[in-house]
Amino acid sequence: MAEKKKDKNKNKEDTVTDAKLERYFKVTSDALNKAREAPENLNLEDARRICLDMVQRYLEDAGHFKEKGQIVDAFAAINYAHGWLDAGATIGLWDVDDSKLFTVDKK
Image 1 (cartoon, rainbow, N blue to C red):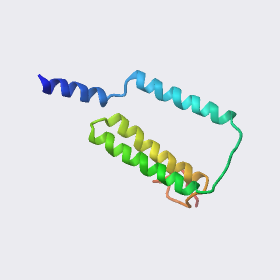
Image 2 (image 1 turned 180 degrees about the vertical axis):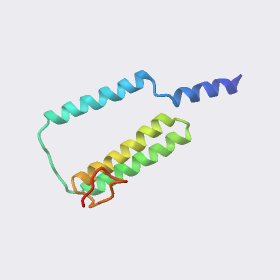
Image 3 (image 1 turned 90 degrees about the vertical axis):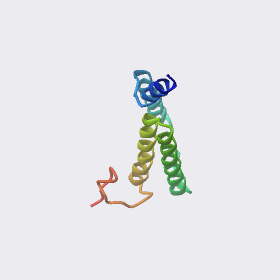
């Protein structure tokens, strides 16, 4: 009986529910609106180090979620990490030209 309960919980964690998806949409939409309204505040001092640190942290979070069987959260975290990498490439924190790894392709 305990095994069935564990499997039931694991399936719940592996599922993108409507509620979870709506929460992600709302947070991202709210953040986009706030970013659009905010003035520019560009400070590149330590930006490369900070971005790479965030990528590493989200990559580690993804591994942690995967180990716990929280596949949806692992997938979200790994995509968030890659978003930081693409953002860094877009603003020139790293000069890359690999369109298989980044959305920026400088030919």
